[in-house]
Structure formats: C-alpha cells, structure tokens
Amino acid sequence: MSGAFGIMWAMALYELAEIVTKDNLVHQGIVSPPKKPGNKALLWVHGLTGRFYGDVKLIDGLADSLNRAGIGFAAFNNRGHDIIANIHKRTDSKGGCDHVMIGAAYEVFEESVYDIEAGIAFLSGKGFSEIVIAGHSTGANKVCYYAAESGDDPRVGGVILAGPMSDRLSEKTDKKGYEEHLGIIKDLLAKGRGDALLTMAHRFPVSARRAWSLLAPNTPEDVFNYGDTEHVLEAFSTITKPLLVTLAGGDETADRPIDEIQKVFDTHTGSKRYKSVIIPETTHGYEGKEREFVNVVIDWMDAVYRT
Image 1: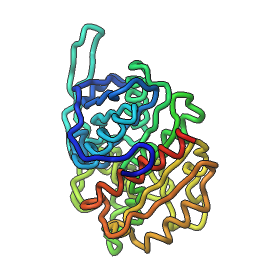
Image 2: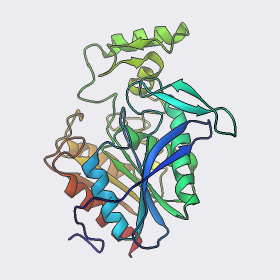
Image 3: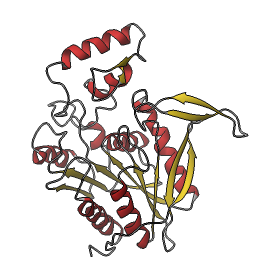
C-alpha cells in the first residue's frame, strides 16, 4: 500500500473515446471512469512517436489506482503519434472527414495545445472539474508549454512532468554533427522546404521544420533548457499550479547527472506545492519501475488533494 490511495496491480476497465480539436483533428483514446463518483481526473499525454495505448504498465497502474480513489483517467493520441501518421480531419458538422499527414515527423509543436485542450474539454464534459495534466517525455514539453500558455485555466488542478528531458541536450543527439545539421536545416527552411524529410538530424526521419523545433535553442519546444545559463526554464517557472516532476535515475537521454538536472528544476519552480522525485535505477520510460512511478504519482495526489 502507498498513501491514502494505496496501489494494487489490476486491469482497469476502459471505454474507447474520441476527441476533436479546435483545428478539427480527430484523436482516438481511452477513458477509465472512477469506481466511485468524483470530480477529479488525470489526462495522460504521450511522448514523441508514442500513442495512447503505449506504456501499458504505467497506464494500467495509474488508471486502476486512480479509479479506486474516485479519480478518472484518460489518454488520447495526439498529432505527434507514431513517426508519420494519417490523421482524420473533420470537414463538416455531419462527420465528414479528410486525412492529413502529421505524426512526430511533421507536427507543429505549438499546435499541441489544441490536443491537450480537447482532452481537457472532453473530461470537463464528463463532469470532471479538477483535471491533472500529465505528460511523459515530449508529452512533458507539451504539458509544460500548455500550462504556461493557458495561464490560470480553472479546469486544471495540477501538472505532472514525467521524464522532462531536452532533445537538444540529449545524450543521443549527435554532438559532432549538431552545428552542421542545424546549418542544413536552417538552409532548407530559408528555401521554403520545411517539409523536407531528413534522416540525419534525429533518431528517426523528421521534417526540417520539426528538426529545428526539436534541436535549435530557444524554440517554443525547448522548454527544458536546464543546461543553459540564460532564460532557463522560463515556461516552467510560470507554472503556479501544484506541480510534480519525476526523473529516471538511469535516463539514457540525459547528458549530465540526473541530480544536477533535478536541482535546476528545483531552483526555478514557481509553484508553492512542488515536488521532484528521482526514481533510481530505471530508464527514460521507467521500465521495471512502473510500480514506483505510480506510487510517486499517487502519493503526490494524495498530499495535494487530501490535505
């Protein structure tokens, strides 16, 4: 058991659901209603190339534990699911659809706010008035950006940033080719070739426009610039909602010791109800330590909502 909520591993019950964004994209996902009435829910935002049915152990552990505490759970695809995705787009009020090619290779980071807002609106429409938005990996970038851009959204009761790592500063970023790659990307953008698909700039094929967003300094996506000396974590610092940061002790994407990254977050938070936790001996996706991750989330929600 852990905290007032406790935790047992069991298969949560899910309902299939769809959301439609303000720019008319249709995303599929799941919602898991609580086992007893409540006004709180957690919205899970997956990471780069992810999907709503990824991270099964994390999702099942979170959904089941939250449900038994009277807290709902939902997870949806966003426009960054998979590398290249053919996403439905509504064309009229009668349900007519077209298709657009997006996915992680082509998504515009700033438009991720539409995906998160649609998820929040869906849960709000289900009667949940206090929603925690939780993002993993690039999902954390998106949640951080949304929280900073949306200001005091009354529907959002808290923020969780899981694995908030920088792609630009990542250990997996090609340091030797970095400046050369940026030069190539910048040249393509100047020539109006932002959709050109590159295979050398990132770990998977990615458009020049998205590569710039991921790898160039001071882009809207570069919210976790914990290695810089100026304008550090500016978006993060504006979040005043209850805030949890979870880091993996053996995160393979980190370019420096995790405790150093944690200290930067700790010294730049603007939340009075803030907590950061390093989960030791695990990877970026918390493999093998899913139970510990869920315990951290449940204990934090226990402290925020039961005191």
